[in-house]
Image (cartoon, rainbow, N blue to C red; front, side):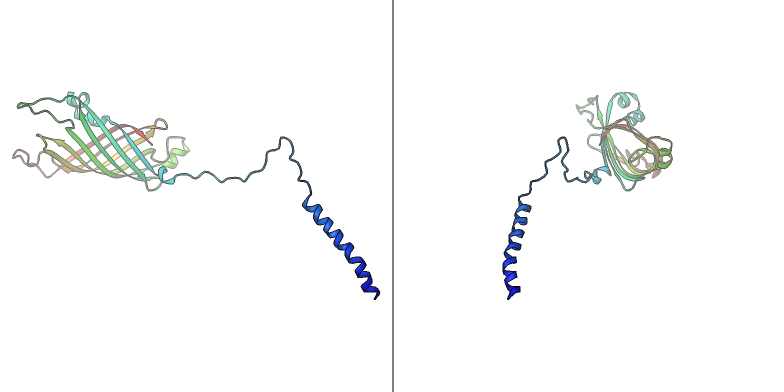
Length: 229
């Protein structure tokens, strides 16, 4: 039949052309890169930040306020008040913190009978919370502000401890309202100054047969220079 004869003649030619086109597409040269052009690479997202470390401040330093309040040779000149602390941010304004102080004696005296004075005659621990106020106003005025930075009010459960005779330790717990300020000097150094007033147990209660009122007015002063990250 004429139609079948035409298909037999036309079909081999179509297959030959299709094969040639397929071979040409596979062997087509890749365009050369333009000299000086920077190859496009997959872009990476922003580097992840450690959110946990941004909310935690660890610090160690000296609390000169303790030496000042002791006074005399055994205070400001006779002791090194080492201080360590940690502060955790609950939000941009509220934090929880803990602090421990130890007063190392530079001058250890020998008493009658050969007993020496204690290397750490006094210390303190405190747990509390802070509210850093007026952060927005400080930002508008271009004053120091931010995480753990600014002026604050706080409430602290405090326990002052001192050695009396030998290994005997006397503790005076108290609850204090504080006002203070914390500032960074540079990336690694900061200072924290606060003062407070509150109520606590008396030191000399039931000591050497003496008695006193169960509560007394307490004051607190801290002036610390810290290495903190």
